[in-house]
Length: 280
Image (cartoon, rainbow, N blue to C red; front, side, top):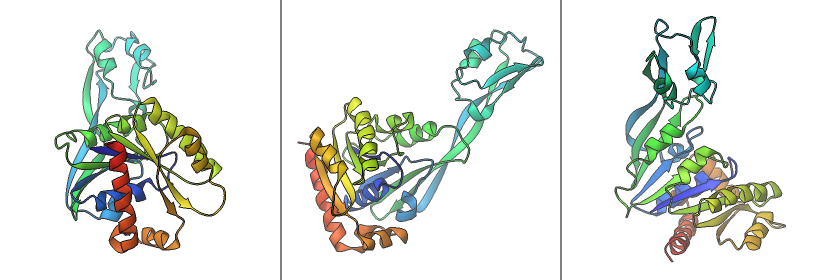
């Protein structure tokens, strides 16, 4: 079973939730698909690391074969090609590696080269397999890294897999959630948090995925995110109080359920609730 953990913005607590759920699950797999800012490995500190470089194809033009017909320029929807002063220019930074220019060129003037955009680090921490996607600074899209991370994850359907998703509701999030069996949405108890929860709820609901909500940093007073859940009839899986002790554990890069028995019991109960919701 694959459980995706999402939030409307960064810093809401999805890494806290996904890391601690993976730890209390025993034999489990943790996939960090937040490739622009992967933090899960900072908590797990996995050993026996294996590193896989991830590259994409970038077109290379043979100027001697190019006749300047501009068919490739017209085809490229990302404006990654330009024909200026009788020379075809490829802007690698915005190329999406679709390969369309290679296909439409009547002169066969294109070849392709590999361009490294990031890496995947695989290691083990306790009983958890930790897989982290890390995108190089300045790259346009981390989707190829996420696709590589998610490959082969159906080989062992009995293994609980927790997917730490990118924040927000962009296409990279949709790519990450597409294969998930259940979604956990993490939200803060503020008006802004409720707004972000509404956005990510619309996305997950549109994709037809079953879902539940974990409310984080709960204090006394109004809770617009809880009100949103009640209005929409969304199951509230659990509420994490605003706790300086938890914040201190996080700030040290430690996993709460390894450091505090109370939080271990709390996350074990949360995992039980999630599995009951996911497998009624």
